[in-house]
Length: 406
Image (tube, rainbow, N blue to C red; front, top):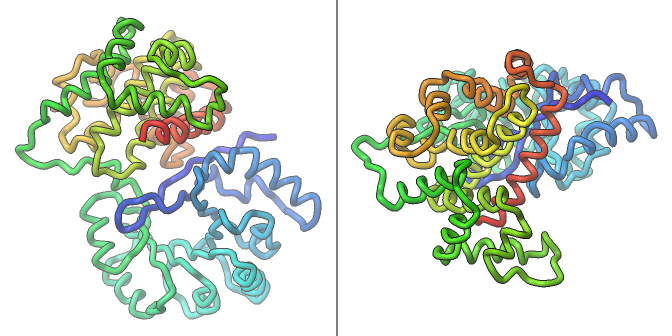
């Protein structure tokens, strides 16, 4: 089976809590489900696409918005997916003829959530608007005046409005004022720079811990001492290792046992995430998750590169790529105070050097810029076919580990 390229993009509520993810496929789901027919063949095809890409892993216990083409909707393919998880997105180029409307009416009657994507009002859309639960507006492409006019026309109590392509805090606040309830875009990854704000001593200490423990020279003994003298880190580590996830017969009762069980590398990562979580108090949880995915994804990409690259350096590169959004300070001001390698600083501050291509590849993958992903993979001499599996592995590791670090 051809590898299915898929990224997930978070969707937030008004409080910046994670509501759902949208799955972004390479060239759309239609390319992976051509000319589907009902019955067993379709079921087998779905099993070999959506479910083998790790649907549960990507969902992380949340709803998944999935785009469906005219063909797939008319053949009622979404009915083969779980209605408790899937939100059916109807693409903007769908022509609402009798067959499509009847199929969507059946899905709505069966309890599926229906969303209209990239909405621009046309009278022929009225039957689909009547069936829809969620309407999505491209907040950058559609003029604000046009959005306000559409919103007056769509005044229905049970209709949820979603603003997508929300890329800045100002856009998020503007969408809120217009009555939107859900928000999609990378505004949560952008730093809210507060002029004159200095990095606090406690923040600097936590960043120093993150930088030092991911260095190649930091010893296991030093790691054990660091964890042992920090009650908060020790408590979360023991709670994580003694959770049902590991299903251990005997409990972990010392840092030395924890190091033996998880291994030095994973303990370092876990302590980094606890430190990052403390730094990001008051920020969306998804910001920490995104930083973790980037860290693990970078580390895995580095392992597949032709040149020898330190796994610690690659993990730190990804993890610190969002530190400006966490702290609310410019990247150069933050990294200037930390003992990170020159390569990491050059990549994150100036987007130059041998590591810059890796972090750019990760960013391009998470925003589903597939052509750019292909070009960057080639430039970095990476096997592009391995990327989907590595991304899934990074998502799974992040979801599991951040849950333990919370």
